[in-house]
Amino acid sequence: MTEAKEATEATEATAATEAKEATEGKEAPAALRALIGKKVGMTQMFDESGNVRSVSVVKAGPCTIVGLRTPEKNGYSSVCLGLEEKTKNISRPYRGQFDKIKVSPPRYLKEFRISSIEGFQPGQTVTLTGRFNPGDYIDIQGISKGKGFAGGMKRHHFHGGPASHGASDRERAPGSIASRRSLGRVLPGQKMAGHMGQDLVTVAKVEVVKIVPEDNLILLNGSVPGANGSTVYILETSKTKKKRVVAAEPGKKSKKRARAAVSRKKK
Image: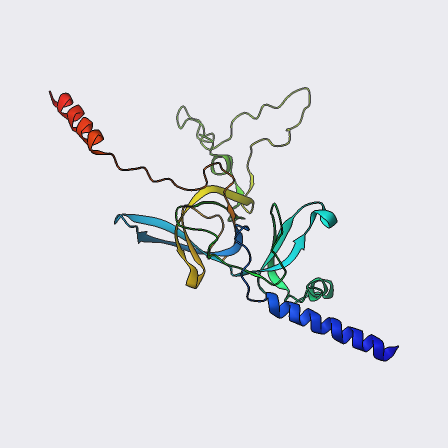
């Protein structure tokens, strides 16, 4: 019995190793338009027209598929991505769930919903190649910078009181908060001074300016939440318009009409 058990375990280990080698290094299908990355910072670049554009730089991936969620087992379809390998302070339960699928424990983990998981397998690599292109719109999520305790003007952009008529202590005050005599308390959600920042922020419809696949860099024409080095999540935009559409150049008739309109204005 012992020899048979050892032979079965050896066969299972060999099959798992072969499955891991078969999936490692393989690119995941492009149907998954999502990545985990890290904010690098900001810079500027010249576009094709010679204009200077300020861009935010994000190092996106490469990520590894470390798990799948199926409708039969979990009630929905999603792909779990991992970024970087965790090398220390790994708990045994955390390591155990990845040992089952023969994948290294990731340092950063995020689950992304998808319509179908067909073609996806644990161990596949997810990169920028074929997933995003210049001109695409994306949504980017991250934890905003913590500002500590902030007043109403900084936290909620209040106007403040008048700086005249001797009201020197009311210039940055929030004003009336509508005390509600029947309740006698401040209602939840009232805009007042308090903790600012350190929230999950989503910036929608950010344009992809350039992709540098060899360095896993994506350049975005917009702000990215969080400090440099913080983790961000790149997703396909939830807005209707998924890609920037370049307006067609006006034809000869349109140019003639424009010149005629300018001449009429001069007269």
